[in-house]
Image (cartoon, helix red, strand yellow):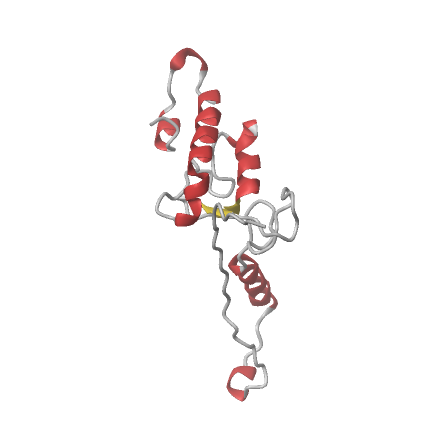
Length: 153
């Protein structure tokens, strides 16, 4: 039996393990208000490292994966938003995406300096070019906002 490794994708996750100890007398005197508790819950949701599209953790598989449990590669955007590769491909393939990041609505580009993006770079460039060509206005007039968002290069 012969095995040939054709590629390796390394992904790691980490988290701070900070226990919340309410028995400490110094911190127990001030009770948070209901508004503060809601804000804290929202912040903890934002701090979780999850795909901005499917809301699954990065170390889990996305709903589009063919082999659940095997992990799903992530890609890093220039806008600092990260997604499962299958989720962002599916999003960018829709007509309504217009080649924009689903979270900040900037023109989506892969971060070229990230090694994790290298295997997907050419495929994303083709996909983005196709989407952007499809969204150029009729009559050949180029919208200044389109140019600013990185549509026309």
